[in-house]
Length: 339
Image (cartoon, rainbow, N blue to C red; front, side, top):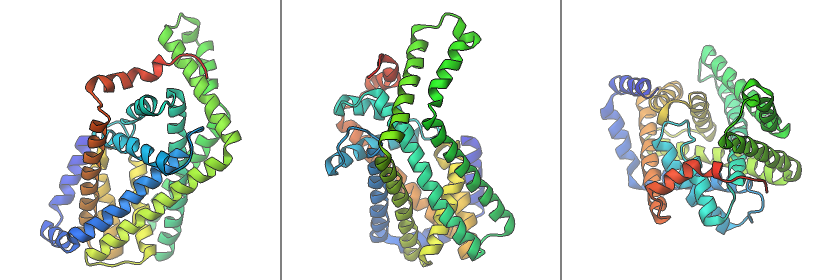
């Protein structure tokens, strides 16, 4: 996937006037980039706040949001550097929550599942609005609109299935099926038994959350929706500085199309080529300029590099060592027993 993404990126850059791209980026300037980066910082804080509402028992406040933002930044850095479909930082985030905030591994794991669910729900709401605007504007031809509509329908179906599965204790049923299967009838190792118990325990936490914490779930989804919509301001300001101002509705169309493509092709490491391809396609349709899409992608890549640097710096401040990372990989399995 990485080779395919790099090949796609190379083809896009080869067919793009890089001189024009550089000229547009010079129009952006440091002040424009700083404003765009500030918007992305607000997005990161909103995402951390959305995650905060999935952690039961953690008080909601600025201090808690700040501490979770730091953990989120460390996780982002590792996710961006590993080809694990955005999951490379989860074990380390669980380790940091346990070591520095006393949150049990299974509570942290349940919050990761819930945070992914609320984030996807927010994405679905945002992309739905973008799709309606896209359909009404006629930016894309009918085949592209049909493809986008199919992707949106699939996302809504998956989000609905994910929420229903968590409410119906599907992980616990999976545990029971494994025990009744030919594999379960054989002697299971202690590690496998602990893992099955962990599934059952996490399943209980998920189901209890949807039953007892509906307000927190709604607030988590609300912050996720806010995160995705506020991100369009970065597109709006960036295009204005790049010399091609657009309306807020057009910025939503561009961002929602990009989010849909990235969500569909999540398995490509670092969205190599897919991000550039999506922005070239939608900016070509909206503004008639593929170079504008490459310039937007360059801004996002610069943001990612800065975020990785900040995340690694925070990880260094936490005194994370190679041994800690190895321990984090095995940490959840070492926490046996129930609540």
